[in-house]
Amino acid sequence: MNQDMLNQVSWQIRNDLGTNLYADNFQKVGKSQARYSFDLNLSFPVCHVDSISKQRYVNYLVLKNVAMGNLEKKDNYAVNLPKFNEVNKKVKTHLSALNEESEKIILASSSNKIAKLSEVDHYLKPISFIMGSMFTDDSFENDENIDPRMKKYLSLLSDLTLIEKSDDYYTPDKLLVSIMKKSDNLKEFKENIYAYLLDNAYETLRDVFNFTFIEPYIKLENSYYSDSVESNKLIRQTKQDMLKRFKIRYNSIRPYKFFTYLNDLVNIDCLHKSDSSYIGDDEIFETVSDKRKLIKFAAVYG
Image (cartoon, rainbow, N blue to C red; front, side, top):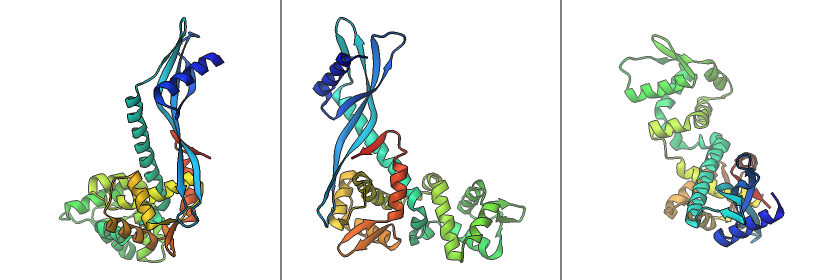
């Protein structure tokens, strides 16, 4: 590669696709010195405002390898780039994937708090019954007439090596015993189990048991903490600003539902309220910030 070739690629990208895309990771194609492939990365500014101080925080979000191009040296330099619409679709796919990865990080970073939602105990009532019996009696009866749905939960707990099956009873496995020893009472024990399930079996809970009610909570958390990660600090937001930001990142939501989810997250310390604004939790923010750095196809630069 020489500077003339790089200049030609940069000019062609600006001309065909705009100024926010740039070439990276040039690789020779075959043994020829005349043909190269390269990644197209997207870099664009993100600006978030602290609702109270009105301080603006501007950084750059980079989406890596949103598309590919190639360069061939013949009589002149021939730069081949994808069409604008194709790149636009791939950018949307990358942004959607970034949200999905960020939501997984949010769940992993706050599962111990999400597990305290009263609705979790409600939706996982069969597991609540099983764990209550395990905590008080060190067993749960293996009844052949047991409800089929309960059998699915028992199978899930067995697959996670939390319980083991004998002829007449299910009993705690070593992992469950260790969780039990760390719990001061039945309520804490159940919450610790729910947190473990959210960490290790959420996809099964969602897909097999239709455990989807926590998704709005995760999306709300992700909307706030993504803004803070992209600002490199916890920012304060009013509930109206949080709602606006949520609608930008996700689809519309009824305000009364949004504010209900917001209050619930405050009650379990995923977010904190101070006068008329809300701010994130330091521990969650640090964990989310560290794990977001591990996402290979996106990064924040300031």
